[in-house]
Image (cartoon, rainbow, N blue to C red; front, side, top):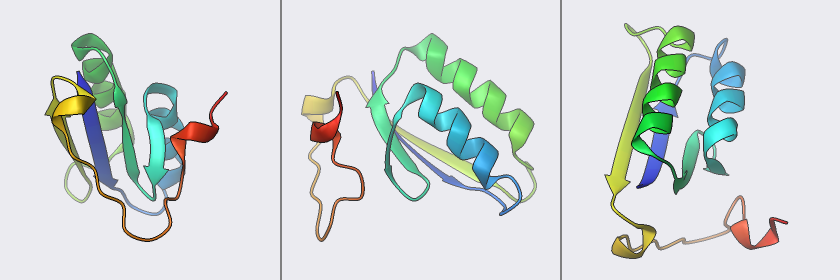
Length: 87
């Protein structure tokens, strides 16, 4: 499946969350990631994220689609991380 993951995490924990999400998805913009991921890997990511986050103050939002082609993406302004530059 294709997902967009957005998080709002406290300043003290944001570095750990960034490192975790980069292991599973492509960084797009501050606190925003996207990419193909299996349901099992997504559950694994979210379980690890729950350990990092403070459930009372922090949040994660996951938008999912069967495939990227079912999602229209429009970037206005500078794209923070151009995926075409990946090796």
